[in-house]
Length: 449
Figure 1 (cartoon, one colour):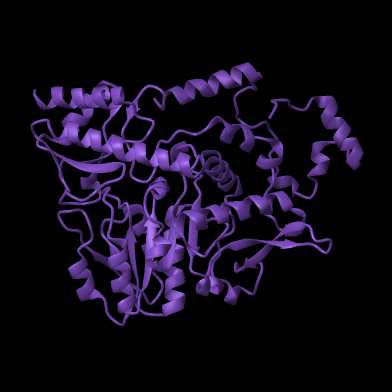
Figure 2: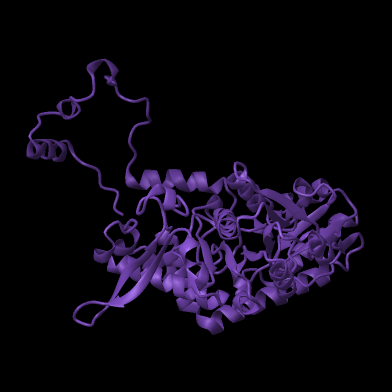
């Protein structure tokens, strides 16, 4: 968008066309005594080059281009094909808002329909909605949906699910007749299935797990789903790293009832944590309890393909007491980027990206655990994250790494009291072998001091 401001002549011309003589007259409906009479205390205007330079200097403080980062935990670095930026920044894509008059918003509806189709293909589920705010609200909406369907007072959630997601679920459900119980994990990093089986009963609405979970380990989705169903509960799967679906079996094939999570990995920049793009998919028998909206494909009276909003269960479209959710956006632009990303890569491209993630985290894990004083915390299979335990205080190691412009990982004691000096590290296809070797050499040097 061009940086072109209005001149005084432009402003006067606009005022003349609407029949007022001044901006003060334009706001005559505002009582005189509460109007601001003086100029705002703001810096003077900048030219376009000055403004660009100003923001570039601010961005340099982030260190985004200086630091080698191995941070993950639900926000991941991935390669974004140039076509994603090029197409998504076109005016016709970046300007549309949510389709309040859907039939005339055919382009927007088509993008939503394609996004839903891709999510269904990846998850193996019957239907997907037009996206949610982010993965955390998607998780909360999935729990609310399960509660509407089963109407039972207890939900079991894996302790290894993302702690922020668990907090949002707690916030959403705090005024409901619903008890949230945590199920711990084993030394493998997987949920304790025997403990889960003991706590499942006829009062359980749903079992909620994440895979790969927050500590990087892949869960036994088929077994957990089977035990949940045997107890009459629903199976809810959270996915914060959807690139894993490029290699993993689609969860729908295991009978999972609801799959929800975060699609940030699909062409969305990290951007200080948002905006991101939540997704949700479920089995078709739960259609009427699905939050948000569903775009569908049809034909017009001339037999031409067209798109419609097939289902809208939010309070703005139906009576409030019948609404399933107050979700009031579909993050359409983020969903567009995810759609372009997936369609640019295709099945083979996504599979290759996922395979590189598996290979590189395995290489990093093998190299790092050869260092004296560094061990793998969990024995389970991982995708692109793992937890390492350090014999030295992580604060000391982290400070030394940052002096070398390396962000070594996320300390987990913030979220798990029993994980002192345990760190979650993330490696994706953006990390070269040289990047990983540099990280390993610096850790080795710090640990030998």
